[in-house]
Amino acid sequence: MKDFFGYLKSKVFLKHFVLSIVCLTIVLWILFKLLGVYTHHGETAEVPDFKGKTIAELDKFVSDKNVGYTIIDSVYSPEEKPGIVIKQDPEAKSLVKHNRMIYLYVTSTQAPQMAMPKLVDRSTRQALFMIESYGLKVGKITEVAGDCKGCVLKQFFNGKEIVPGDAIKKGSKIDLTVGKKEDGYSTAISDSTTTDNSPEPN
Image 1 (cartoon, rainbow, N blue to C red):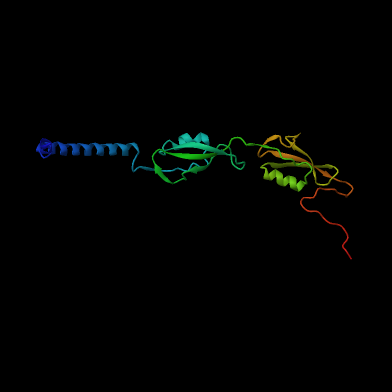
Image 2 (cartoon, rainbow, N blue to C red):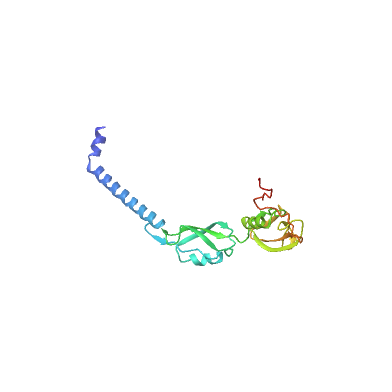
């Protein structure tokens, strides 16, 4: 035990101990430098504006921007052309590390399918409201003689009658055939209210 403590106090031990500390410090410094190079520590890139770019343009667009991209979702938007970027995360002009992945949302190339609603036997006003609320479009409205004035008799898509529940793409045009009466008397379906024509009490 005496020899051990004596060795700890010797110049040889102190020399090796100091040398070990120096070597460890150098190794750690080199490791931190290499880690900084690997992660591009201190280097940032400005996020470019992807909005409005088509999917076909993206690879060329990011080739010199020091960022990457990935498409994570598609959104149907009838007002926009299909296959273009409408949203990104992070936003344009944000500062990020080199080679940061930018997440993109693009417009869908195909409209989603939905079930055709029942418009027959509804008033024209109700039918038009339902068409728009379901994401469809109003097509041609044709009046024919019928038992009621202003009520929907038939519903068509691409010239063919379509029944409720049939699959149809959002944005499709729906044509309607509505009834009209020639004799001036109407049994039209009421939109939301009824009129009481009973005589007022004396």
